[in-house]
Amino acid sequence: MRRVRWTATPDRRAAPSWGLVASLAVHVLVGLGLLWAAPVRRPEPRRTPFLEVEILPPAVPGGAPPEARPPVGRPVGPQPPDAPAPTPVPPGAAPGPGGMIAATRMLSARILADPRSREAVKTLSQLSGDDRIDQLCGFEALEQIVAWNGRLHPDRVVSYAIEETRQSGHRLTAEGAAVHAGRRWYRLRFTCDLAPDGSRVVGFAFALGAAIPRRDWESYNLPDEGEAAD
Image (cartoon, rainbow, N blue to C red; front, top):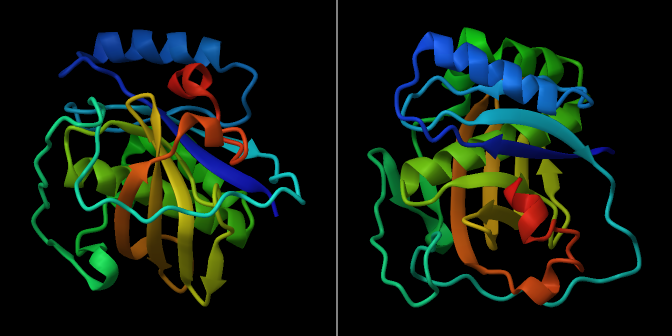
């Protein structure tokens, strides 16, 4: 099965005009000319990343990852390790079993329904069931993390970084995922439920954990800081 990673590059301009949006889109398309998936723009003016679909090679067998560390109890973000941070929880989300936050409002369907996301929708329609589930759930993870804590700016999720995902019926469980935000990689675990036809996410819960030490990035096949920040 092919491995899939979502990538988002935030557009930091708060409310761009359509002229600026067109100019920026042309610039990004030139830079990504060799990629098979066209960029997609998220409609919210507050945070409008370009999303691209990137197929990752499978992890090299034989190298067992280091033992996973338990998640920390406080939120993390692009800040010094000891800096205090609030613990905001968006409306409709509440901690569930295992300290996971269960969202009652799914976010990926609304983003993908926007006309500017038509290329991403086309790409998803061409993928097999497992790859489609991995992409949709990764996209939902990025959006839910942003909604949970606006101080975080995640741009990549690797659902199988530390441990392979499990699929049962229409549910994907990722106990050893990793998310990149603020030039760091963090442990992430989530469950993601899809509709019977696999067209959309209908349930999602997640817990963000501790920062992954830089010395472990290579063993987990995570891009280094410079590459991940591109």
